[in-house]
Image 1 (cartoon, rainbow, N blue to C red):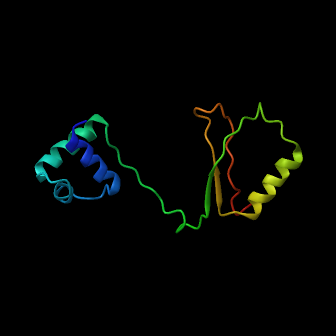
Image 2: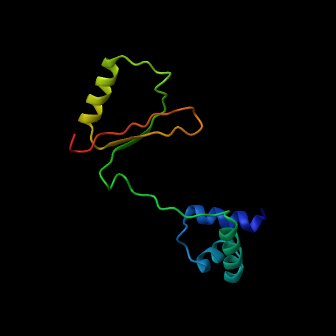
Image 3: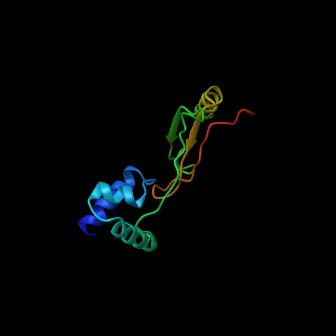
Length: 115
């Protein structure tokens, strides 16, 4: 990547909602230059945009990413019961995991308000 492309990507990481005019001013190039580079990087898949929720405003306190493997972990029923009890008492927690890359096959999350 060229230096100007790196600067543009860094500015987009800081705030992807900036206009091309604002980006141009931030990195010291013309707005058409930013538009051209941004469009090309988007088309090539070098930059993508995602939304991030403000989980605290949505009422969540903690996000925990957990990894495990049901085949490898032989947990006594008491540990499972303790974990279920903990998540039941803390409904504003989300527990998420993925099996990608860590040989995991478990997904855990806090129960909904319905139990």
